[in-house]
Length: 133
Image (cartoon, rainbow, N blue to C red):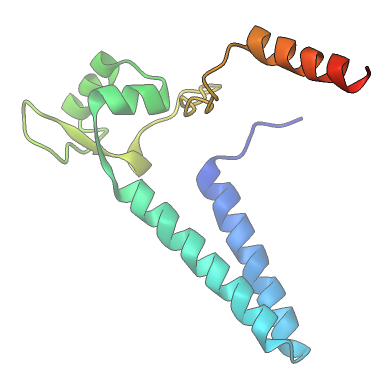
Protein backbone atom coordinates (compact mmCIF):
# COMPACT_ATOMS: atom_id res chain seq x y z
CA UNK A 1 0.00 0.00 0.00
CA UNK A 2 1.47 3.37 -1.07
CA UNK A 3 1.43 6.81 0.46
CA UNK A 4 -2.00 8.39 0.86
CA UNK A 5 -2.89 10.93 -1.81
CA UNK A 6 -3.02 14.58 -0.76
CA UNK A 7 -6.59 15.86 -0.50
CA UNK A 8 -6.02 18.23 -3.42
CA UNK A 9 -5.11 15.26 -5.64
CA UNK A 10 -8.17 13.33 -4.45
CA UNK A 11 -10.42 16.30 -5.26
CA UNK A 12 -8.81 16.81 -8.68
CA UNK A 13 -9.28 13.12 -9.52
CA UNK A 14 -12.86 13.12 -8.29
CA UNK A 15 -13.88 16.23 -10.23
CA UNK A 16 -12.15 14.91 -13.38
CA UNK A 17 -14.11 11.66 -13.03
CA UNK A 18 -17.36 13.61 -12.61
CA UNK A 19 -16.61 15.64 -15.74
CA UNK A 20 -15.88 12.42 -17.69
CA UNK A 21 -19.21 10.99 -16.53
CA UNK A 22 -20.92 14.22 -17.57
CA UNK A 23 -19.44 13.87 -21.06
CA UNK A 24 -20.60 10.26 -21.22
CA UNK A 25 -24.13 11.20 -20.13
CA UNK A 26 -24.19 14.05 -22.63
CA UNK A 27 -23.09 11.68 -25.42
CA UNK A 28 -26.15 9.55 -24.59
CA UNK A 29 -28.52 12.55 -24.51
CA UNK A 30 -28.86 12.46 -20.71
CA UNK A 31 -28.30 16.20 -20.46
CA UNK A 32 -29.86 16.62 -17.00
CA UNK A 33 -27.57 14.00 -15.49
CA UNK A 34 -24.60 15.54 -17.31
CA UNK A 35 -25.48 18.99 -15.98
CA UNK A 36 -25.77 17.60 -12.44
CA UNK A 37 -22.27 16.08 -12.57
CA UNK A 38 -20.78 19.26 -14.07
CA UNK A 39 -22.49 21.42 -11.44
CA UNK A 40 -21.23 19.17 -8.61
CA UNK A 41 -17.66 19.25 -9.96
CA UNK A 42 -17.71 23.03 -10.31
CA UNK A 43 -19.21 23.50 -6.84
CA UNK A 44 -16.64 21.21 -5.20
CA UNK A 45 -13.73 22.93 -6.98
CA UNK A 46 -15.01 26.35 -5.87
CA UNK A 47 -15.39 25.21 -2.26
CA UNK A 48 -11.89 23.75 -2.21
CA UNK A 49 -10.43 26.90 -3.80
CA UNK A 50 -12.16 29.04 -1.16
CA UNK A 51 -10.86 26.82 1.64
CA UNK A 52 -7.36 26.77 0.17
CA UNK A 53 -7.29 30.58 -0.09
CA UNK A 54 -8.33 31.07 3.55
CA UNK A 55 -5.65 32.84 5.62
CA UNK A 56 -4.67 31.18 8.91
CA UNK A 57 -2.43 32.08 11.82
CA UNK A 58 0.67 30.05 12.59
CA UNK A 59 -1.19 28.35 15.44
CA UNK A 60 -3.99 27.27 13.09
CA UNK A 61 -1.44 26.24 10.45
CA UNK A 62 0.40 24.20 13.06
CA UNK A 63 -2.80 22.32 13.97
CA UNK A 64 -3.60 21.68 10.31
CA UNK A 65 -0.15 20.68 9.12
CA UNK A 66 1.53 19.16 12.15
CA UNK A 67 4.59 21.45 12.16
CA UNK A 68 5.31 23.65 15.18
CA UNK A 69 4.67 27.37 14.99
CA UNK A 70 8.42 27.88 15.48
CA UNK A 71 9.21 25.70 12.44
CA UNK A 72 6.59 27.52 10.34
CA UNK A 73 8.09 30.87 11.37
CA UNK A 74 11.53 29.55 10.40
CA UNK A 75 10.19 28.55 6.96
CA UNK A 76 8.75 32.05 6.52
CA UNK A 77 12.11 33.60 7.51
CA UNK A 78 13.85 31.33 4.98
CA UNK A 79 11.29 32.45 2.38
CA UNK A 80 10.16 28.87 1.82
CA UNK A 81 6.66 30.00 2.85
CA UNK A 82 5.04 33.31 1.91
CA UNK A 83 3.90 35.50 4.80
CA UNK A 84 0.55 36.90 3.72
CA UNK A 85 0.12 38.91 6.91
CA UNK A 86 2.34 41.45 8.63
CA UNK A 87 5.90 41.07 9.93
CA UNK A 88 4.89 40.29 13.51
CA UNK A 89 1.48 38.80 12.66
CA UNK A 90 2.21 36.23 9.98
CA UNK A 91 -0.59 34.56 8.06
CA UNK A 92 -0.41 31.65 5.65
CA UNK A 93 -2.76 30.47 2.91
CA UNK A 94 -4.26 27.21 4.14
CA UNK A 95 -3.50 25.63 0.77
CA UNK A 96 0.22 26.44 1.22
CA UNK A 97 0.54 25.01 4.74
CA UNK A 98 3.07 22.14 4.66
CA UNK A 99 1.72 18.82 5.90
CA UNK A 100 3.84 16.57 8.06
CA UNK A 101 3.74 12.97 6.86
CA UNK A 102 1.15 10.98 8.77
CA UNK A 103 -0.41 14.04 10.43
CA UNK A 104 -4.18 14.26 10.40
CA UNK A 105 -5.78 17.66 11.04
CA UNK A 106 -8.06 17.85 14.07
CA UNK A 107 -11.63 16.70 13.54
CA UNK A 108 -14.68 18.55 14.65
CA UNK A 109 -16.01 17.08 17.91
CA UNK A 110 -18.81 14.58 17.47
CA UNK A 111 -22.19 15.98 18.44
CA UNK A 112 -23.64 14.45 21.57
CA UNK A 113 -27.09 14.39 23.05
CA UNK A 114 -26.01 15.47 26.52
CA UNK A 115 -26.10 12.01 28.09
CA UNK A 116 -23.20 9.85 29.19
CA UNK A 117 -22.89 6.54 27.34
CA UNK A 118 -23.82 4.68 30.52
CA UNK A 119 -27.06 6.64 30.79
CA UNK A 120 -27.96 5.82 27.20
CA UNK A 121 -27.21 2.12 27.74
CA UNK A 122 -29.30 1.98 30.93
CA UNK A 123 -32.17 3.70 29.13
CA UNK A 124 -32.06 1.20 26.26
CA UNK A 125 -31.92 -1.77 28.63
CA UNK A 126 -34.85 -0.39 30.63
CA UNK A 127 -36.92 0.07 27.46
CA UNK A 128 -36.09 -3.45 26.30
CA UNK A 129 -37.02 -4.87 29.72
CA UNK A 130 -40.39 -3.14 29.65
CA UNK A 131 -41.06 -4.28 26.09
CA UNK A 132 -40.39 -7.92 27.05
CA UNK A 133 -42.83 -7.90 30.00
